[in-house]
Amino acid sequence: MDVKEKVMEEFIKQFIKKDCKDILVDDIAFNIGMSKRTIYENFHSKNEIIKQTLKHYLNLEHERILTLLKEESNPLKRILITSYSFLHSASQISLSRLYNLKKQYPEIAEELIDIQHTFVDDVILNSYLQAQKEGYIFKEIEPIFLMALLLEGERDPRLKTVNFLGKEFDVIELFGAHLFTIIRGVSTLKGIEICDKFYTEWKNLF
Image (cartoon, rainbow, N blue to C red; front, side):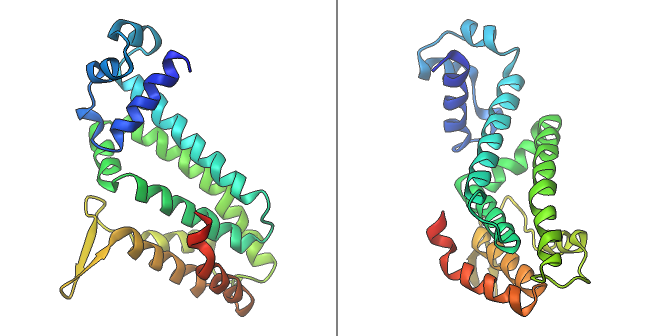
């Protein structure tokens, strides 16, 4: 493992526990037994560490999803697998961490969002169009309209739970149910069969 790999691995370990602004290069250097000077010989700045590390792990996540999709030809199931994979990843890192990244390092966050949007366009939107063509999704529903419906279900990312009528619900589980309900709602009878089968099996996939 080279210097950059060691630094990025240590950074992501700390990112799971705290915000980027609270991660100190001194701590990274100490934990991996390396001098700050050596780190800065490989990264221009702390911002560069943040950007390269998060881009690297985002790309790894995309590769993981593409691996899952290799053996799946059904376009509707590809949408479900991709969506729930992202949901699973979000459950591993506090959503507040991502929210604070946007506030503290907006340029880095914007670049990561662009990478994510490109991936989503290539995978989900293409699968959506194919699912419509094959009769799994109503042809009258535009892909962008579906995205708008899904985003409408977003909650304050700083919250881990949502209180409704005195009962606490996990945000990730709530959004997962919302996501499934929307996709199933725009599906034909043929598509609903795929959705229902997936819903009983998806937890075993991840």
